Length: 339
Image 1 (tube, rainbow, N blue to C red):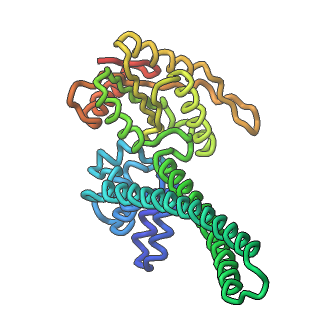
Image 2: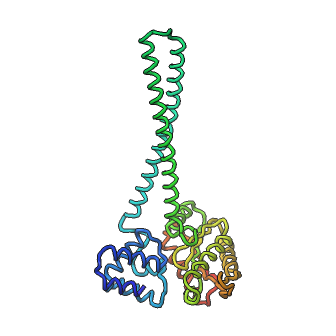
Image 3: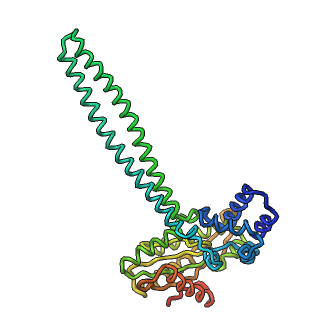
């Protein structure tokens, strides 16, 4: 990362080079290439001697990757692209999806009506042919015109059928895109955006909502010893272990080596027992190098668990759980701390 900032400092080489450097930065930091993270990277690389770039360089010295919390601590909120932009973007996506769905319904209805009209025309033409004596010119013209209309209706019907398929495919792609925007590409768990939305939904039910913030212990050493590819596989395995231990609850990757869990409808003892079970599940896994079968050693997590109070926003609750997480770290790691 430090090298990326330095290269940009020597740059002034135009927007294409800056664009490439932003891509390199996002890939190196394992940040999703969404508009918010792109804007964050742009702010750093476009002003490599500025205070933000210097702070990021200090944080990432030695190959450390940025976490979402690091970005928040720097005063940059990756959940938005500017005042109101995220809401505006999501509103446009939702509006587009509604328009596509409406178009699909209209085209499907037109298709059905066209089929009915075409059948009626064809039946009418057949009836006229059967009833009209040969040589009656005026009625023969009616038969000819009707037959031409039938052909045109059949052509329109084929076009409408094609348009219906395209509308259905576009709707499916929009739904997939909306799902991908809320999914972490590495672990395939829900991402931070999905977590924040889910917290708001759960909190609105009035049922008790517990939030756990989990962090992989000594994760930097895994990356340093075995490389980022192995580190990524460890994160995927931990995500799967948390999902298994917290089945029926909401598990998401918050960013970097941090995961979050939302436990709804549990009392304090059950919530703590669930997170203790998750901790043990992760601890009991045996991680090995795929290439050599060499063991990585024990990989553990620390967690902070707190109950959301009435009217509290996601950041307030997360901040309290994060403080408990740091207490767990200072108490020796591989433990759960509850307020």
